[in-house]
Length: 302
Image 1: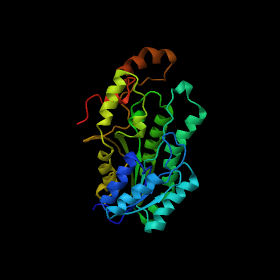
Image 2: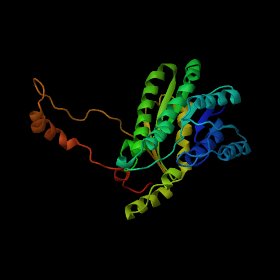
Image 3: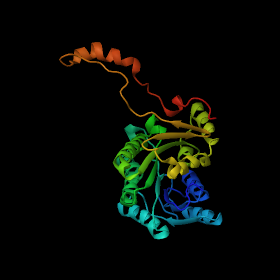
Image 4: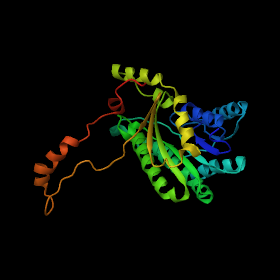
């Protein structure tokens, strides 16, 4: 029971990966705040039943859980999500920022509303909930954040400029939280999941390649993601902070983070001509190709 007595908020916990995380935390002794507004994949509408059903499942298994239906994209709502943990269990020990929506569109057709809606839920929502928990983590000198990111941002994907930008923003946010909160014994990590979900299921499969990729995704269960998240929320993860992990079926990957890989120096500085003639030809062998997630993870999941 690695999470015995810990109170952990899981956003977007009514369905899919979030649901499996909430159940896993409950199985490991954690007290779970199940947050979900019950919206559609695009963020429209509300329904309390998904969160209520997860709470009932945790309680039926002998665990403790409470539901809260506020939106992570609202500053006051995020505060109420954290307050629910304090009111229900007297403390907060972890935040799992999982809530998300999709508004996929090619960049050249993307509307301002489609951009803002995804940024608000993913990036702003992760900040709002994390920030609401921060004073409590700081006061008790303990706490853990797990933020959900995506290889769509870390590597690349088409038709997801809003989602990719938000997810890479979350990765940077997590690193900043890890640096700022380290002195208070607070950890912050990211997980990029490969698993079948409503989001994945909405991806168009209008080419043979896309259909083959979807077939692989359908074989990857959301429950496979949950143990890593539960571990990162537990005291067993002491010393693990500022990292980005990817989970794919039975595989765990530690992802790289940007660092210098090649350099050129010019006495007296560079000109447009010397950059074109010397710098770019020397740097070009280390350029990254325009790859998508499935190009990098090209083998079948183990």
